[in-house]
Length: 193
Image (cartoon, rainbow, N blue to C red; front, side, top):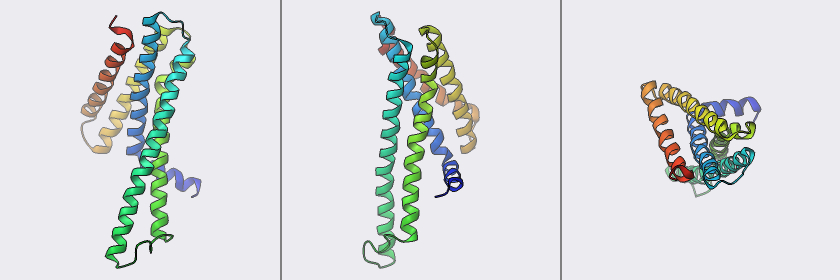
């Protein structure tokens, strides 16, 4: 697959890119804020860089999980579709393997895997960057929260436009999810003490 074709395929899956990015932002925001809160509440001296690396490790785990989960799910779906097509065409099972139809299915599987994994990984940088770049805990935490919510609003507007629904409604729904995750992370991370 040529680079231009690859980029076009990736952009055609923009809905999944947005959802994967949202996964990365929300999951890693939770991990990062919890790690920061636990360190602060316990009075443990942990650098912001370590908190950022903790979030990044969570982002990598999420990206791999999403990529391989997508691979397994898409592979099963494409195999089922191929077998059904063979039945309708009254062909023996496996007769469509190594055909153009099979190659297209493999391409869709790869693109789905890449899209889900890469977008999750990319989204995970939003909550992590302030902790990697800012030495003081409170400004890094505030910056993370602001960046995450700005990114979530942008994703909400985009998803609202794609779905042709209210941009405001979609953005508010996504921001509410972010608030719930933020509150839970705060409570687990030391906000209870």
